[in-house]
Amino acid sequence: MVFFCSDLEGVWVPEVWINVARITGIDELKLTTRDINDYDKLMRHRIAILHQYKITLKDIQQVISQIKPIDGAKDLLSWIRQVSQIAIVSDTFVEFAAPLMAQLDYPTLFCNSLVIDQHGMIVDYQLRQHDQKRQVVKALKQLNYKVIAFGDSYNDISMLQEANEGILFSPPENVKNDYPEFRVANNYNELKSYIEKYL
Image 1 (cartoon, helix red, strand yellow):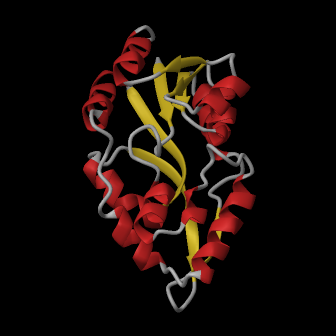
Image 2 (spheres, rainbow, N blue to C red; image 1 turned 135 degrees about the vertical axis):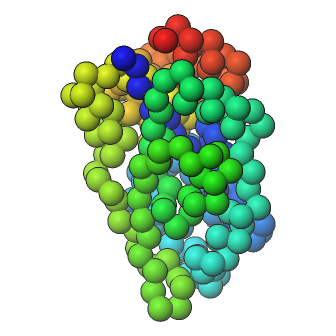
């Protein structure tokens, strides 16, 4: 039996931090895991910028409430859930994800959490599990699933490597060039055609 695992941002919804950067006008927040493959370094950078500009969790949640799924995302995700099983495995946070999950009809999501101070500022983050994307795939394989994984960024690579089959979905050129061993789906139609081969 096949189980699918996917990233969230860049696959089903736009990048949250890019939207925060766009709406706040703070270009330093545009960096994502497409640019920096050290997640801790990226998050420490983000938290420092938020403190510099006094941006609270509530401010970020207001931005997220305006984000809509990528065109076609809900339909493809719904189709996958009808023909198989899927878990979204993301480096986002519980505090960010709720409005996005509501728009996608609440698929299974594994993600992290934030540490918030008394002023509503983000002061730290807590990983649910180290290298959780790989660990989720490994656990599903131990349950005798064949796992097909897809994502778009450096932080998805361990998940794709651990899966029986890994697919880069609409990746930037730098990720595609660094990992030429993965097949590439440039849009939902191509992704669906790949998925159908495993059903």
